[in-house]
Amino acid sequence: MSQEITGATRLCFVVADPVRQLRTPQVLNTVWETRGLDLITLPAHVPADGLSDFVAGMRSNESVSGAVITVPHKQSVIELCDELGPNAAIVGAVNVVRRTPTGRLVGETFDGLGFVAGLRARGFEPNERRALVLGAGGAASAVAVALLGAGVERLDVSNRTPSRARALAERLRSAFPSADIGTGLSRVADAELIVNATSTGMSPSDTSPLPPELFPAGALAADVVMSADLTPFLAAAASSGARTHDGFNMLTGQIGLIADYLAA
Image (tube, rainbow, N blue to C red):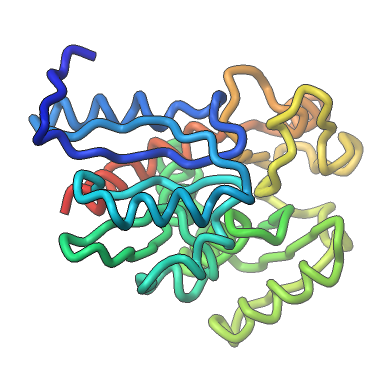
């Protein structure tokens, strides 16, 4: 990157634990340079017990424009925001925090919109499709809301802690009362879209959250985890004959929205 950093340069962060695997800093810095904006994005490896202090530092630093928030902070950061945007309020998770000139922190999420945009860019239209979302955290909530908003025919939520899947399903039914929303894997056999919205795939020791034998042949397996290699989920899907869609598609689908929000 050839950008000159001055006293007027504004800062954005990508906050995660771990952060090494993410490409968001490089992608956003390319956007800033292309747009001719005096902004720079830096990685911030922040563990859960350090999030509150880090966000307090953002609030007091007038050079900060905001931050991209990712695993494992998308839900816990909510209580540190002064205000939530409309998507974040429905989803119950935040993946971008913008600092206003007065130091207020406004949280919003673009994960779901970016995920659907990424699907469509690759030629997969979710409208009237049967979908299964694995996970019940912030990313899963965002993806589920966006898929229902895009008109999926059916959506099931599965999580290793069933009570969390049921809680997410209840929130989704409140927002989409006429939608067909279930929990568990009982309808996986005819799913057309299976989404790994868990954090599985960030560690070399991880295994797929769905066994290879449960992937329907011909289904699209989409991961939200960004990795240069096939994640365990996508490897399991490929071995069963399913098509694969990696996590970089979700980033590509939302990066323009994130940049607009942080640069506002």
